[in-house]
Length: 254
Ligand SMILES: Nc1ncnc2c1ncn2[C@@H]1O[C@H](COP(=O)(O)OP(=O)(O)OP(=O)(O)O)[C@@H](O)[C@H]1O
Image (cartoon, helix red, strand yellow):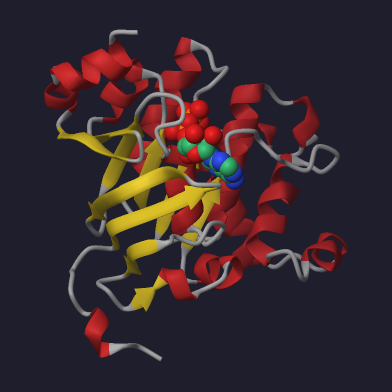
Protein backbone atom coordinates (compact mmCIF):
# COMPACT_ATOMS: atom_id res chain seq x y z
CA UNK A 1 0.00 0.00 0.00
CA UNK A 2 1.24 3.48 -0.83
CA UNK A 3 1.48 5.85 2.12
CA UNK A 4 0.26 9.32 1.10
CA UNK A 5 2.66 10.97 3.53
CA UNK A 6 5.55 9.75 1.40
CA UNK A 7 4.77 12.03 -1.54
CA UNK A 8 7.45 14.49 -0.56
CA UNK A 9 9.78 14.32 -3.52
CA UNK A 10 10.04 13.84 -7.27
CA UNK A 11 13.40 12.11 -6.89
CA UNK A 12 13.79 8.55 -8.12
CA UNK A 13 15.87 7.85 -5.04
CA UNK A 14 15.64 10.05 -1.97
CA UNK A 15 17.90 9.56 1.03
CA UNK A 16 17.43 12.12 3.76
CA UNK A 17 19.09 12.31 7.16
CA UNK A 18 20.14 8.67 7.01
CA UNK A 19 22.34 7.28 9.78
CA UNK A 20 23.54 3.81 10.73
CA UNK A 21 25.93 2.59 13.41
CA UNK A 22 27.86 -0.66 13.68
CA UNK A 23 28.85 -1.50 17.27
CA UNK A 24 28.61 2.18 18.22
CA UNK A 25 30.57 3.42 15.16
CA UNK A 26 28.49 5.78 13.00
CA UNK A 27 29.37 4.57 9.49
CA UNK A 28 26.64 6.78 7.93
CA UNK A 29 25.86 10.13 9.55
CA UNK A 30 22.92 12.23 8.42
CA UNK A 31 23.44 11.30 4.78
CA UNK A 32 21.20 13.07 2.25
CA UNK A 33 21.37 12.26 -1.46
CA UNK A 34 18.72 12.79 -4.14
CA UNK A 35 18.92 11.01 -7.50
CA UNK A 36 16.69 12.37 -10.27
CA UNK A 37 14.89 10.08 -12.75
CA UNK A 38 17.26 9.30 -15.61
CA UNK A 39 20.30 10.58 -13.77
CA UNK A 40 23.80 9.08 -13.69
CA UNK A 41 25.65 9.82 -10.44
CA UNK A 42 29.22 8.99 -9.51
CA UNK A 43 30.02 8.42 -5.83
CA UNK A 44 33.62 8.88 -4.74
CA UNK A 45 35.36 9.11 -1.38
CA UNK A 46 38.17 7.58 0.68
CA UNK A 47 38.13 4.04 2.08
CA UNK A 48 35.59 3.77 4.87
CA UNK A 49 33.63 6.84 3.69
CA UNK A 50 30.42 4.77 3.67
CA UNK A 51 29.94 4.20 -0.07
CA UNK A 52 29.27 0.45 0.22
CA UNK A 53 27.11 0.95 3.30
CA UNK A 54 25.03 3.52 1.37
CA UNK A 55 24.46 0.93 -1.39
CA UNK A 56 23.61 -1.67 1.28
CA UNK A 57 20.99 0.69 2.73
CA UNK A 58 19.41 1.38 -0.69
CA UNK A 59 19.20 -2.34 -1.51
CA UNK A 60 17.85 -3.34 1.91
CA UNK A 61 20.92 -5.29 3.02
CA UNK A 62 21.43 -2.86 5.89
CA UNK A 63 18.63 -1.11 7.78
CA UNK A 64 19.30 2.52 8.71
CA UNK A 65 18.85 3.56 12.36
CA UNK A 66 17.26 6.81 11.25
CA UNK A 67 16.38 8.79 8.14
CA UNK A 68 14.24 8.38 5.06
CA UNK A 69 15.01 6.18 2.05
CA UNK A 70 12.32 6.63 -0.60
CA UNK A 71 12.04 5.32 -4.15
CA UNK A 72 10.08 6.47 -7.19
CA UNK A 73 8.90 9.96 -6.22
CA UNK A 74 8.32 8.92 -2.62
CA UNK A 75 6.00 6.03 -3.50
CA UNK A 76 8.00 3.37 -1.67
CA UNK A 77 9.69 3.48 1.73
CA UNK A 78 12.69 1.20 1.18
CA UNK A 79 13.38 0.93 4.90
CA UNK A 80 10.17 -1.14 5.17
CA UNK A 81 11.03 -3.60 2.37
CA UNK A 82 13.36 -6.60 2.23
CA UNK A 83 16.12 -7.14 -0.36
CA UNK A 84 13.94 -9.25 -2.67
CA UNK A 85 11.08 -6.73 -2.70
CA UNK A 86 13.53 -3.89 -3.37
CA UNK A 87 15.12 -5.79 -6.28
CA UNK A 88 11.64 -6.46 -7.67
CA UNK A 89 10.90 -2.72 -7.61
CA UNK A 90 13.70 -2.33 -10.17
CA UNK A 91 16.76 -1.52 -8.08
CA UNK A 92 19.57 -3.65 -9.50
CA UNK A 93 23.04 -3.98 -8.04
CA UNK A 94 26.34 -5.16 -9.43
CA UNK A 95 29.01 -5.97 -6.88
CA UNK A 96 32.69 -5.28 -7.47
CA UNK A 97 33.76 -8.87 -8.13
CA UNK A 98 32.16 -10.46 -11.20
CA UNK A 99 30.04 -13.49 -10.34
CA UNK A 100 29.20 -14.95 -13.73
CA UNK A 101 28.44 -18.65 -14.26
CA UNK A 102 31.80 -19.66 -15.73
CA UNK A 103 30.81 -23.04 -17.19
CA UNK A 104 27.82 -21.59 -19.06
CA UNK A 105 28.12 -19.63 -22.29
CA UNK A 106 28.00 -15.86 -22.35
CA UNK A 107 24.51 -16.02 -23.94
CA UNK A 108 23.23 -18.47 -21.32
CA UNK A 109 24.43 -16.17 -18.54
CA UNK A 110 22.19 -13.46 -19.99
CA UNK A 111 19.35 -15.99 -20.35
CA UNK A 112 19.71 -17.00 -16.69
CA UNK A 113 19.51 -13.34 -15.68
CA UNK A 114 16.43 -12.83 -17.89
CA UNK A 115 14.65 -15.76 -16.29
CA UNK A 116 15.52 -14.98 -12.71
CA UNK A 117 16.75 -17.54 -10.21
CA UNK A 118 13.54 -19.55 -9.79
CA UNK A 119 13.22 -20.87 -13.31
CA UNK A 120 16.89 -20.55 -14.27
CA UNK A 121 17.94 -24.20 -14.12
CA UNK A 122 14.97 -25.43 -16.14
CA UNK A 123 15.27 -22.66 -18.69
CA UNK A 124 18.73 -23.74 -19.82
CA UNK A 125 17.31 -26.99 -21.14
CA UNK A 126 13.99 -25.62 -22.28
CA UNK A 127 12.73 -24.01 -25.42
CA UNK A 128 14.23 -20.63 -26.02
CA UNK A 129 11.78 -18.34 -27.71
CA UNK A 130 12.55 -15.62 -30.22
CA UNK A 131 11.79 -12.84 -27.77
CA UNK A 132 14.47 -14.17 -25.44
CA UNK A 133 16.92 -14.63 -28.28
CA UNK A 134 16.37 -11.06 -29.46
CA UNK A 135 16.72 -9.69 -25.92
CA UNK A 136 19.93 -11.68 -25.35
CA UNK A 137 21.46 -10.43 -28.60
CA UNK A 138 20.38 -6.86 -27.83
CA UNK A 139 22.12 -7.01 -24.43
CA UNK A 140 25.22 -8.66 -25.95
CA UNK A 141 25.37 -5.97 -28.64
CA UNK A 142 25.13 -3.18 -26.05
CA UNK A 143 27.88 -4.75 -23.94
CA UNK A 144 30.13 -5.50 -26.93
CA UNK A 145 29.99 -9.26 -26.32
CA UNK A 146 28.05 -10.49 -29.36
CA UNK A 147 31.14 -12.13 -30.89
CA UNK A 148 31.62 -14.07 -27.65
CA UNK A 149 28.03 -15.25 -27.22
CA UNK A 150 28.78 -18.99 -27.48
CA UNK A 151 32.04 -19.04 -25.49
CA UNK A 152 32.05 -20.24 -21.89
CA UNK A 153 31.99 -17.22 -19.59
CA UNK A 154 35.01 -18.66 -17.77
CA UNK A 155 37.37 -18.00 -20.70
CA UNK A 156 36.58 -14.35 -21.44
CA UNK A 157 38.77 -11.56 -19.99
CA UNK A 158 38.21 -9.89 -16.62
CA UNK A 159 36.91 -6.75 -18.36
CA UNK A 160 34.52 -8.80 -20.50
CA UNK A 161 33.24 -10.58 -17.38
CA UNK A 162 32.46 -7.20 -15.85
CA UNK A 163 30.55 -6.21 -19.00
CA UNK A 164 28.75 -9.56 -18.97
CA UNK A 165 27.63 -8.95 -15.42
CA UNK A 166 26.48 -5.44 -16.32
CA UNK A 167 24.61 -7.13 -19.20
CA UNK A 168 23.01 -9.60 -16.78
CA UNK A 169 21.76 -6.66 -14.76
CA UNK A 170 20.59 -4.88 -17.91
CA UNK A 171 18.63 -7.99 -18.98
CA UNK A 172 16.44 -7.47 -15.92
CA UNK A 173 15.78 -3.91 -17.10
CA UNK A 174 16.05 -2.22 -13.69
CA UNK A 175 14.86 1.36 -13.17
CA UNK A 176 18.18 2.10 -11.53
CA UNK A 177 21.50 0.24 -11.63
CA UNK A 178 23.93 0.46 -8.72
CA UNK A 179 27.41 -0.40 -9.93
CA UNK A 180 30.27 -0.91 -7.48
CA UNK A 181 33.84 -0.20 -8.72
CA UNK A 182 33.33 -1.56 -12.24
CA UNK A 183 36.77 -0.65 -13.61
CA UNK A 184 38.99 -2.02 -10.81
CA UNK A 185 41.62 -4.20 -12.51
CA UNK A 186 40.73 -3.05 -16.04
CA UNK A 187 43.13 -1.77 -18.69
CA UNK A 188 42.84 1.89 -19.75
CA UNK A 189 41.11 0.86 -22.98
CA UNK A 190 38.62 -1.32 -21.08
CA UNK A 191 38.02 1.53 -18.63
CA UNK A 192 37.16 3.87 -21.51
CA UNK A 193 34.81 1.28 -23.00
CA UNK A 194 33.10 0.82 -19.64
CA UNK A 195 32.45 4.56 -19.38
CA UNK A 196 30.95 4.49 -22.89
CA UNK A 197 28.83 1.44 -21.97
CA UNK A 198 27.43 3.04 -18.81
CA UNK A 199 26.69 6.28 -20.68
CA UNK A 200 24.82 4.24 -23.26
CA UNK A 201 22.88 2.38 -20.57
CA UNK A 202 22.11 5.72 -18.91
CA UNK A 203 20.11 6.75 -22.00
CA UNK A 204 17.33 4.48 -20.71
CA UNK A 205 18.24 3.71 -17.06
CA UNK A 206 19.30 5.68 -14.01
CA UNK A 207 22.74 4.69 -12.79
CA UNK A 208 24.78 5.12 -9.59
CA UNK A 209 28.46 4.25 -9.91
CA UNK A 210 30.89 3.97 -6.99
CA UNK A 211 34.43 4.33 -8.26
CA UNK A 212 37.92 5.44 -7.23
CA UNK A 213 39.32 5.87 -10.76
CA UNK A 214 39.07 9.63 -11.38
CA UNK A 215 39.81 9.42 -15.13
CA UNK A 216 36.83 7.07 -15.38
CA UNK A 217 34.62 9.34 -13.25
CA UNK A 218 35.57 12.27 -15.49
CA UNK A 219 34.69 10.22 -18.58
CA UNK A 220 31.22 9.50 -17.14
CA UNK A 221 30.59 13.24 -17.41
CA UNK A 222 27.95 13.34 -14.66
CA UNK A 223 27.23 14.88 -11.26
CA UNK A 224 29.64 13.66 -8.59
CA UNK A 225 29.12 13.17 -4.86
CA UNK A 226 32.13 12.80 -2.56
CA UNK A 227 31.36 11.03 0.71
CA UNK A 228 33.51 11.35 3.81
CA UNK A 229 32.87 9.89 7.25
CA UNK A 230 29.36 8.85 6.28
CA UNK A 231 28.03 12.09 4.85
CA UNK A 232 28.30 14.31 1.78
CA UNK A 233 31.52 16.31 1.74
CA UNK A 234 31.12 17.85 -1.71
CA UNK A 235 28.71 17.55 -4.62
CA UNK A 236 28.45 18.94 -8.14
CA UNK A 237 30.37 18.79 -11.40
CA UNK A 238 33.62 16.83 -11.51
CA UNK A 239 35.55 20.10 -11.80
CA UNK A 240 33.82 21.56 -8.75
CA UNK A 241 34.31 18.42 -6.63
CA UNK A 242 37.87 17.67 -7.80
CA UNK A 243 38.79 21.31 -7.12
CA UNK A 244 37.20 21.37 -3.65
CA UNK A 245 39.97 21.79 -1.09
CA UNK A 246 38.24 19.52 1.41
CA UNK A 247 38.06 16.74 -1.20
CA UNK A 248 41.72 17.25 -2.09
CA UNK A 249 42.66 17.06 1.57
CA UNK A 250 40.79 13.87 2.50
CA UNK A 251 40.83 12.02 -0.81
CA UNK A 252 42.51 13.26 -3.96
CA UNK A 253 45.62 14.66 -2.37
CA UNK A 254 46.61 11.39 -0.74
N1 LIG B 1 28.77 -4.81 8.71
C1 LIG B 1 29.63 -3.96 9.28
N2 LIG B 1 30.00 -4.11 10.58
C2 LIG B 1 30.84 -3.26 11.17
N3 LIG B 1 31.38 -2.19 10.56
C3 LIG B 1 31.07 -1.98 9.27
C4 LIG B 1 30.18 -2.85 8.56
N4 LIG B 1 30.04 -2.37 7.30
C5 LIG B 1 30.82 -1.27 7.22
N5 LIG B 1 31.43 -1.02 8.40
C6 LIG B 1 32.30 0.12 8.69
O1 LIG B 1 31.65 1.26 8.22
C7 LIG B 1 32.57 2.19 7.62
C8 LIG B 1 32.14 2.47 6.21
O2 LIG B 1 32.46 1.34 5.40
P1 LIG B 1 32.11 1.22 3.84
O3 LIG B 1 32.52 -0.15 3.42
O4 LIG B 1 30.71 1.62 3.61
O5 LIG B 1 33.09 2.29 3.20
P2 LIG B 1 33.47 2.50 1.65
O6 LIG B 1 33.36 3.95 1.40
O7 LIG B 1 32.64 1.59 0.82
O8 LIG B 1 34.99 2.07 1.61
P3 LIG B 1 35.85 1.35 0.42
O9 LIG B 1 36.20 2.42 -0.55
O10 LIG B 1 37.04 0.84 1.16
O11 LIG B 1 35.00 0.25 -0.15
C9 LIG B 1 33.94 1.54 7.75
O12 LIG B 1 34.57 2.09 8.87
C10 LIG B 1 33.62 0.07 7.94
O13 LIG B 1 34.63 -0.58 8.69
